[in-house]
Amino acid sequence: MRSLLRIVCLVAAIAAFGIYGRGQSNPSPTPASAPGKASHASPKPEPGKEMGKGGEDIGKGAAKGTEDLAKGTAGMVGNLAHGDVGGAGASLGKGVGGMTKNVAVGTGKGMGKIGKGVGGEFKKLGHKSSHHTRTT
Image 1 (cartoon, rainbow, N blue to C red):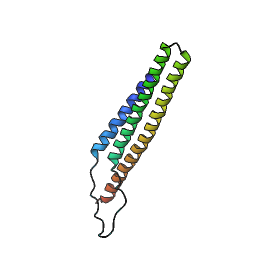
Image 2 (tube, one colour):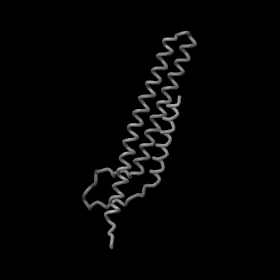
Image 3 (cartoon, rainbow, N blue to C red):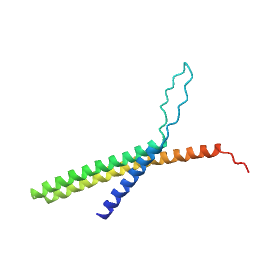
Image 4 (cartoon, rainbow, N blue to C red):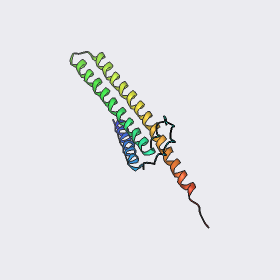
């Protein structure tokens, strides 16, 4: 029970970090394309928005996992009411397995996007620092 509480707190903290990062991004002006040339490349997302999407993916994974756990628990209760102890254990195991899978997938996707966003922020900082010249 304690480990579940720790996971939920970690997910909430990561989601809050992503939402905060999403609000910090400044839109960069896009250069006008040359006349006669169509640009087919999609614009690269801002680092803050990328981190926000990562928090969103983590939240979605946690929500889907909670849904799977609830379905498994409901199946377990139904099986216990009918006296099927083996089916109850199988239902709960299926729910826990689904939760584990969805939380792991959501966390993996989300952390990947958050990592890309953090890397983009460092890249922006690197560009800003290279434009400063120091006079001594």
